[in-house]
Length: 187
Image (cartoon, rainbow, N blue to C red):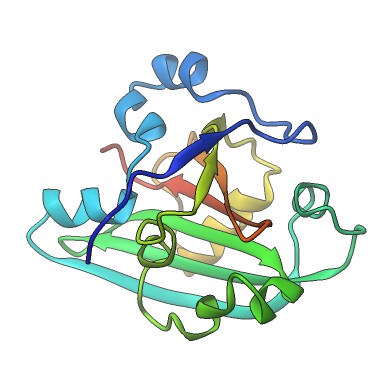
């Protein structure tokens, strides 16, 4: 699979997460938070065994601030996909992706058939794809993404409640796909 360099675009004005570099430097995870390449590819290269576990995929409600990012009214259902990226048997990243349901009939129709394949396989192989600037955030205890992480832990406590996440949008054919990644373990 040939990977293409994804062109950069500015983050939309409704984006509330801060830019990657200031927070990334303070987090001791700068290279992971600011890496513009495929996170899945990097995990594959740095581990002897990589697994993607599909948690859910289909129509669902967007998280609190995602409707505005997609230009949709609050409460509108979106296509949503949640996965765990597991390296050498250890869950390392929770991946969360959303796009408008209408995009599945157009530019992002291939997302409907991903199965256990990474979203990166859909975005980094299309030379026309553009990516917004990377944004990062330390997740607050009330963060919807932290709630998703807790759901994946099946009742086990989270080892480090101070988790960092990054997100950006991939634009193809005029439609945005937002990808958020929560780092579960220090890289």
